[in-house]
Length: 86
Image (tube, rainbow, N blue to C red; front, side, top):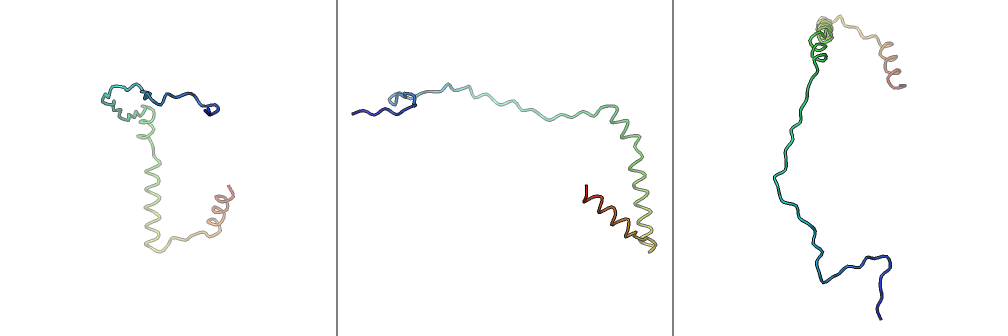
């Protein structure tokens, strides 16, 4: 008695099914490349944000060292609520 499985393709078990092997060439290596546009370079050069921020941080540090820096607790609480409420 011979039982044939359902929905199985016939495989010749006596002959190995060979797959074509590609030649082992050295893989091409690609390096990442980045370009910054001239507009972005201009924006970076003209940015005063970093200078303003550095001046503000310097002033706050001086106030802390002198003992004159006061924290507005109400403003801190409002900002935290804005942040967590979305």
